[in-house]
Image 1 (cartoon, rainbow, N blue to C red):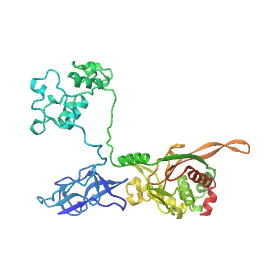
Image 2 (image 1 turned 90 degrees about the horizontal axis):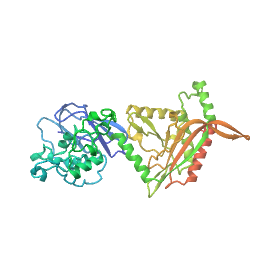
Image 3 (image 1 turned 90 degrees about the vertical axis):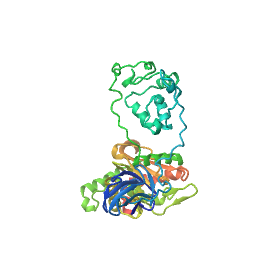
Image 4 (image 1 turned 60 degrees about the horizontal axis):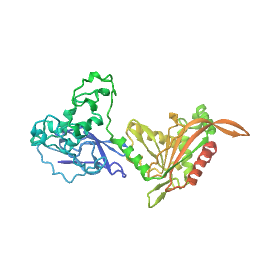
Length: 445
């Protein structure tokens, strides 16, 4: 028998979420067949069969957050016994808030017989009762399909499938006054109102029936979207975030871009983008401000001599943040090449967990989308993140007169637990100066 373990995807990965099973119990499998698709941090991977046989047992269902090196399935020969399951290893993607309180029994609907009114011989699961109460449905009247005729959640869902939603007042009427709710009411889209209780009102009487609110798509929050949501909220809750805004004179950047466009081969810098300029400038300025090139762990701060520059990448699967390692020692051309390679790997799904970890500072650029400024959220435990906006003309005083010059919007968010406002402002000023004199910065290497 072959035990399939959740593989370790990089040194920093502790668990993976099972997105989908490609094989099912009883399916024949051969070595190399894809068993399931898993997700860790912000990358997706496939788990392959390690031998031939039959998929005897799947021990972790889709959506489970499974620690690495935990058994997720067994492959063997038909009829072969599967080891008894150990204590559950999978963790829910989001811990439950706590046990749900037992829902109170709903009073029977008006006109029920004595047995139903007293609830004699009728029982329901807590989930079924809770759902029925929330929807204003008397579960005592439902036929149960559970053990011993018990009403379970699917019985309540079946009863609700052909009925329009109730307004809060209507729900209260069903619960407190034992009024009957019709299948449809006179509210928008057939919504059942308090005045509809006790008398069925055809949905056709509602002028909005069938049109309100229109098509709705329900999208489960899972995978990368769930990870992003949890991390962003945790970042805001756990860190004292302060954002400083400034702008850099972009005339030197524009002049250099023109040189590249006119003779990219001569300069050996074909394909260099404005974002590459910013990555390069940040990699040179950060070593001068070690307070910003650091991680905050509450009891200690780690300041790094090398710059491992993370940058945000928009992908069809969500936001990813790969890391250019040792960016302070790379040339502009090397930074540009590594940024393109990592961005392409993120979009195509080939980025590795190690390439998404180890950053000491992050840059998020929304300028291409026309955003002039924004408040970036810290990529914890990093203490700084730079938001880059679009190039816009800004008024400046020049020799006693106002001139409009192209400027690049910059927004620096810092963790005020680890960095004071003044050091953050000095870093932002030095970065603006470096971008304004990009030719000089590039000549220094």
